[in-house]
Every structure is written in structure tokens, then in C-alpha cells.
Image (cartoon, rainbow, N blue to C red; front, side, top):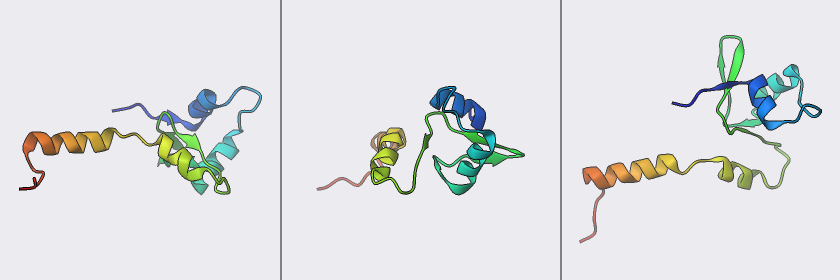
Length: 92
């Protein structure tokens, strides 16, 4: 299981010191769904998965950014489970 980051820790990793957004801006982004994958709110703080990205809804390359941010690992794990357990229906 990966360790989740707070919004401030995530911003430190993604942004330089001069362009780092303020805490209210980060919270607004989390509420409005501008961070992908969507942060989880636990108590009073939002927790973000490492490798999350900021998405601008008006960006024309939004789909490509989301596709690049997604990992293929869940699909690989499901495929390997099918192969190992023999649950996949083979063609005759």
C-alpha cells in the first residue's frame, strides 16, 4: 500500500518554491476535482496519491494527461489472475 501525501507535501513535490500554490488554492483544487486521481478527505485534510497531477478542465490535452497518469498495473494483475486460475474462457 502506498503512503498518501497531504496536499502540502504533494505541492512540495510537484511545484517549485516560487510557483507553489497556497493551501486554500490546493483545497479548492481538491474540492473541484482539479487533481487526478481525486484526493480523499480524511478528517480535516485531503490525502493525495503520489504521482497525482493537476488537471485543467479547459485543457485540450486532458485525456492524454489522464491516460499517462494511469498505471497499467491493475490490468496486468487481473490478467495474471485469469491466467493462473484459468478463469479466462479460451477459444476452441
